[in-house]
Image (cartoon, rainbow, N blue to C red; front, side):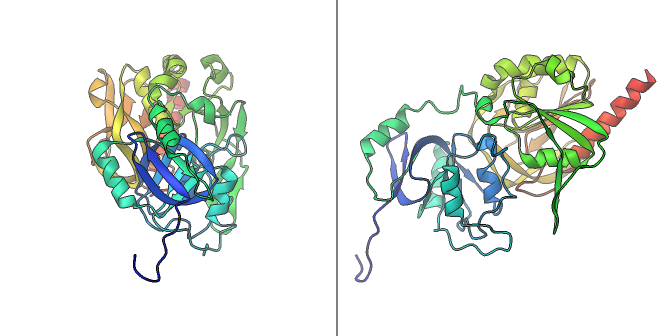
Length: 395
């Protein structure tokens, strides 16, 4: 060792299911928890990422090295806290968290992580870890933090190897609301925060599989009174609100597992000819309801710089994504049209029915975090509702 340098004791570990041990420095909450390790390529929006319920039981590796330098605040969280506190269970950073430097900051990211119970590590070679995930897929692991650096490594290795992983897990019930709620908060405006109120022109029932706040805000911003219902809500419970449209939210876990109770409800909604719009897990559940199949991805799509082509317009948009399962495009039956496709790997990113007011997309068009290229999808939903209203009135 070079004179003048001392080796710091590791206070954090990432222990992979194959036994690999990666040392780092602990941040956030002390303790240990299992999760699937993925990487996210977004340059900004770490607070929105970590509070996205779609990341439940996942450990997020940030490829951008400097995370936490703008601190944390009360406006940028996406889960329905204090209802559930869903989101990533762990976070991995290259550099240590610097002191926050942003006028919107209300505290240090490390304190925020502690308050949320998120185990985090810094000092990790995130490039090497990302390369490992790209080569071998997203591994199951245990992330551990002990301020004194005392770890029972064989026990952690055994724990990581024994965890079942995300396949077969229904996590929507763990992160979604358990009661019916009404949402009226609208998009954020510089200098004034989130607007509320306004005379609603639509009633939208949002089925909560792990929704994000900004999705609800953008629908409210289009003039909607949004009624949020639990993921297990029946078609009769949904239709009792007399919705102009139904939204199927994003969420975590294996769509096939959640689909055991969600798919029959979605099929019944389609039969009632109500306009339906799905995002992320909602898109995957829609595909299952229409006779398609879903599959586990090798490395998933996580980031705010993914190119997707919309075949209905011919345009390419840069989108925000967060999913480890995908719809198998080849499984979509006749009458189901593919509307969007990833230009990274050709995977399906959207579908619609040719004869009913039903469509869905895989990416997160609410841009929280991410670019705003896909905001038009919310306008597409409400114009579809307008057209359906006009057709119903003329019938």
